[in-house]
Length: 166
Image 1 (cartoon, rainbow, N blue to C red):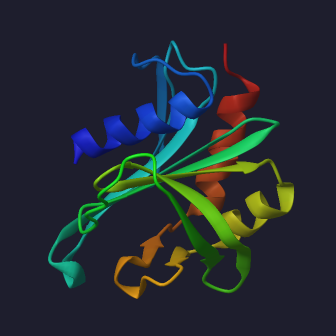
Image 2 (image 1 turned 90 degrees about the vertical axis):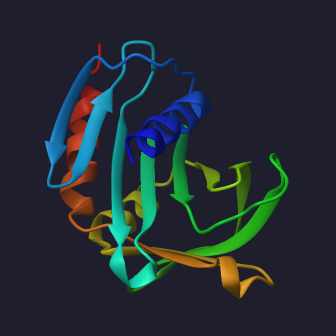
Image 3 (image 1 turned 135 degrees about the horizontal axis):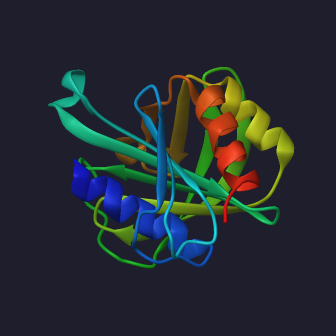
């Protein structure tokens, strides 16, 4: 699981200009909020195993700047073939649609990354959510529902980290 967190943090950070070392870190429930020394921005990450899904690993990393929101999702049940392939998926939470046909880039066989223009209403919807869903076009088998409990607290801590990063 730690391998997934490191990979996800590197991928999320790379989208906004990152490096590998960890500098400051805090916890909100099972979310980790961190600012690595060579990153420009902070990350909020959460990983868990789902017993109802063959005990598979799920990891989500969220980072943002005033220009972009980056979400990395790792699911060890995926087997994407082409790194760099752009997939389209509807993005939603437990009670609302966030975006239709959003672009997600395949980073490796188990990882996708979405980079979106910063939108406060998107952050607000994420903060109220308990689940984040990706419904891939023409591919129900790879569509996913990821649990994001306490997202509001995690995103508040992420905002604090961003406002106080060095």
